[in-house]
Each structure stands twice: as C-alpha cells, then as structure tokens.
Length: 218
Image (cartoon, rainbow, N blue to C red; front, side):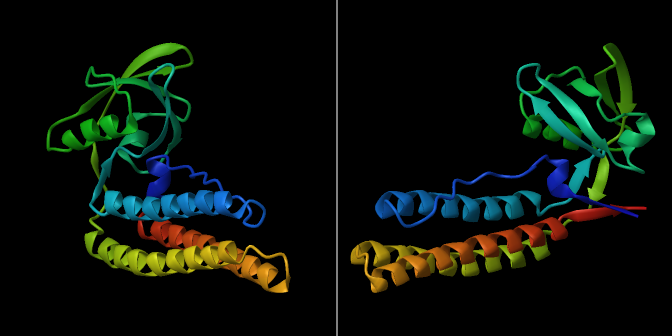
C-alpha cells in the first residue's frame, strides 16, 4: 500500500523562511524573525483550511513551468485515473479540455469541475517531443477531513499564538536590555531558545498536517 501526501499532490514542495540569528543587530533581526515566524504560522493555517474538504483529482503530482506554461508530471500514483489512462512521469501537460492554465489552482479547478458521471478530461501532453491526447476521469482521492482539520486549526491558533507571543516578548526584553553583560547575554540566549521553540513546534505541526492529509492506495 502506498501512502501519498496531499502536500506533494499540490506541489507544496517546501517553504523557505528567512531565519536570521538573533543577537547582533537585534532590532533588525527581531523584525525579520517576527515576519518569518508569522509567515510560518499563517502558512500552517492556510494549508489546513485549503485541504479540509475532499480531494478530487486524477492522481498526479505536477510542477508548473512559468516560461512554457506547461505542467510537468513529477509522479503518477498507482491505481489512479492518471495511471489507468497511461500518463507517465516526465509528461508535460499543455491543455486540459482545450484550455491552458497559468497556475496550479486554475488547473485543479478544471479537474474538480469535471468530476461528474460520464464526463471525461481531454488532456493534451508532450512526451518525448511528441504531442498526444489522453482521456481520463477525475474522482475523489481522499474523503472530507473538515472535522479533523478544524480541530487541528484550533490547536494551531491556540498554541501558535502563545509561542509567538513568548518569542516576541523574549526578543523585546533582550532589545530593552541592550547589555553585553551576563544578564544581557542570558536574555539573548532566552530569546533564541523561544525562537527555536517556535520552529520546532512549526515542524511538528507540519508533520501532523502532512499525516492528516495523506491518503492511501492499495
């Protein structure tokens, strides 16, 4: 049985946050760190909200090329409409139902709209420099997770707000001290510990999000 992360399906392949060390130019780095942590916090909430409902698709992980406006297939999942239709890793989707798309969201919307009995997707793609057309059907690949997502979202908002406030306070205390003595160094150390606590929490929640929105194929 193969377990596939929904995050991979929508190609959230990882988010990079700027995480400077707190200590030298404290006021500047505090602002940068606050921005990074809040971006991490917001990204968690957004991922949970966006993925709560049932996931409808054909079973491919895609990467969008902005220069060519093509979607390269990075993985074809087993026992899915894409595999049954004969899609392969490395294929490049150019149109679906005669339409071109400028974002993953637009393409996903077209796929979801086709998930009705009797309707097929007409997918034009490039394989080995040759154009070809494949027909496939979209279906539900993962059931609704709204209830579980809401519980996780409430946890994120409660815990994340608290940890962010603790980190902000620790940095404010270190900045207010602006001392190079042992007390000042201790405040800087405490601030860095609170910052590390946030990112450890963030990675833990990311794993829970990944686990929640994972589905299995026999």
